[in-house]
Image (tube, rainbow, N blue to C red):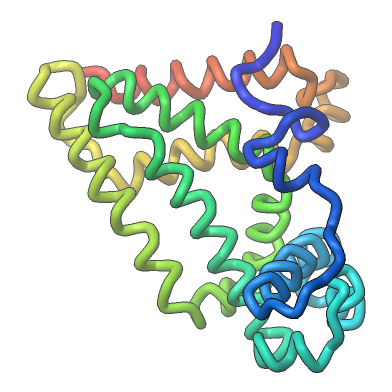
Length: 228
């Protein structure tokens, strides 16, 4: 049974962009900065902040170190921008879900599906966050943008919950922040620990069928908690 989300080894959320080969670099500042950010995301996701090298990022981006330093200052500042960009991408996709136009149960179901599938399709997101937690979120704390990005989602989720209460389908005491953390956590832990859990339970938790089972389980857990 095929899971209702793209696999890492299949079509991803933005497959056309990711599959396209790098074109010959042009003297375009925005294109150069985008190539550097793409390269930095890959480097930081693979080697962490401590292991990533500016030389390697510049080589991946087909740029020189001087240009990298000119646009982003230093390695620490570049990592902050990479984290901001990473969070901005998932927030941008969330805004396209049209949760306002769905009934409350469908809205929560769609948010759960999207969150799980986004983590499946973007393993670099999990790797970057895992690494940042090793540093006590010092780079996230250096950003003013990242906390601001989450406010609209919390407000939107609160509105969905209020509609659910009004319709008599959701309980009345749900904190939208706690709910969002739970939705992310139920998906995040499974995927960030999939290799060790697969070895422990002697099964492939990243197989299509296993991903579908997990998505269904997370959806049932969340909706079961919310029911009035």
